[in-house]
Image (cartoon, rainbow, N blue to C red):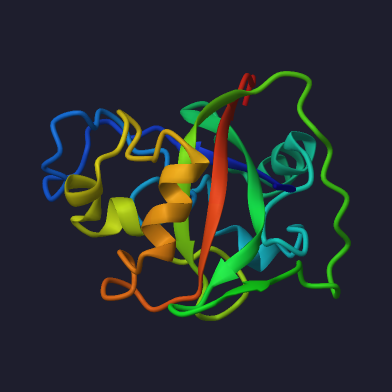
Length: 182
């Protein structure tokens, strides 16, 4: 797994109606579809080559410069597997080299689970297929709508479980919560 960066997310008040899995309490997906980012951040051009942020300080700086309130946000740190699945084969992928990328590691982090994200545009995260489709119910997830293990995520991607829901390629992310005073 490669450290890919941070994102501040708006706290979800309740799970969406379409998520019927009774074990899901709050969604910690990498994508913005359900677990909303603190802002439409791409327009500020402070993200790294993974289309996330290198540090919590950069998020705070962007928020301060643009009048964005971070009070009701949670901070997440992500790592991603070096391979992506195109529906048939696993292939190496890398960050966009046109952006400076120097991810700082958190001093402490709590693993919350593993997300599967599609990247058709090959830039930022698009859909977290577990949270954006009914796959969470079919495949089983934890209380954050994430897989409990990397092995469960890998097997579900490798066996084609995601092939008919959102277009690929698919990448596996480790999702960590990080203490923060946003």
